Length: 253
Image 1 (tube, rainbow, N blue to C red):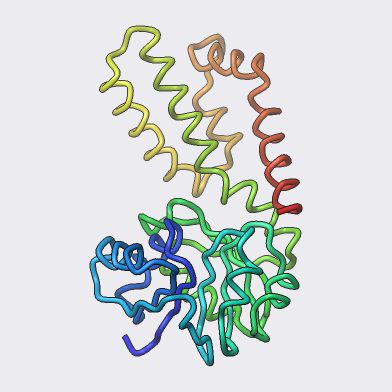
Image 2 (tube, one colour):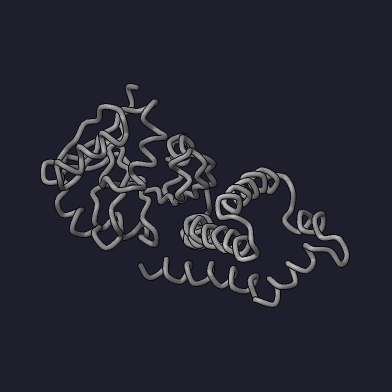
């Protein structure tokens, strides 16, 4: 517990990551509101050091930067001292931009997703190679990590893993609604859907998606009928386009 991580920002993503780190690091949280800092501490369930943003000194600290992308310049202007390293979770905010507004020589961009709250995030990383191992150790506390070779790759991965929980939530809700439409009780539909996603999450770790599909789809069967409906609805194209649109947005944030 001797290592310390300083969170700049106290939103949902900061809280999710802090949950994964609280047993291994001393947590310091920097924010604008004493009330929100207290709420963060209560939600985390452990004692943390809290600092108001106007009083923050970054000197020598390991920073997890968790503010909104639009607030980088404003927040950076308030912070004093030079950080040891900044780990940023901001979508679309480049290493160059972060170094422009934050006083640090080392920046690693990270892109966790919502599953960080249950230690199952798929987090992509890129930036200062000297901090690659440390970055994987810190973000590995909330799930799997993958170091990428460029910021372009990280922005693409943002459109897949970063935004992916929202896409899958839409699909999950739609499938449950489809079962209800056919006459299954809502509570049963939700339970079946959750079981489906839980099991599929395990299967997809070791089996290619195409092989999973072929294993389920027998000639002229129920799966083939449903799969045909998805193809008629251009679901494949829509999913690919969702990643493309998210990537384009990440580049201009």
